[in-house]
Length: 311
Image (cartoon, rainbow, N blue to C red; front, top):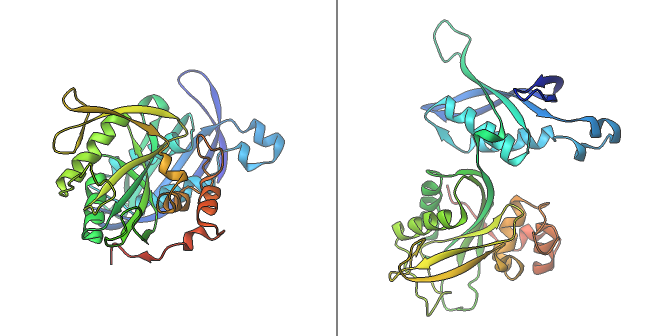
């Protein structure tokens, strides 16, 4: 890591944290190495006085988030990879300016590397950091994998929790569930995202029984957290049980954060695993503390056995 300064078009001068030559393996047509460098605009004056990493951009967290995302996804173009890295820096780590360089060593004959260099600011994106909860107990491994594949077509999946094997709640005479959580970036509004999630459920043959909401299902996709916001949004239940943001059917309100986070371990534990230090928007406790309280154990991640979805 190194430091320099940059001047934005607005004339504002920022300090810059530089992260050079992160090496990752990902798929761009084929599995290959990519090298990523980032220049993060920030104001380090407070950190310079306090000597506290909390007052600066944590380069270790940025690097971890970028490597995790890049190595768990595939791309058609290096331009898309670079843009997604910039989105992570701006939306997750709140930098006002970022420059991203991505190059592929020895990708072109007679050349050391081929790559792109981009600059972005928050004006280039309109993203929200959102946490989703997923569950299935009908062909759960297949349906969870298929749901994640469909999800990645329209949102950036930043991080996935372990896949936890959990006992059914309320209606006990049914198979165990697989539950997990994912952290995503999306430029959709809450109602739009819920409609998209309902479309995934419908494509995986989810049938909603409003008389028995706790029964078996191929896939259940819920919005659990919308950043640190407390909000309500409207969805419309159509005759087939799916959700649509339209004037036909019964309108109902959904609230965020999802109240089930504070009620059920199978919701709280996966969320706490991927974002342990995030504070619950209304409770004020970290998600890790919420999971500890519900499960009654400090090692809340071990409250349920885990299963491998991709093996």
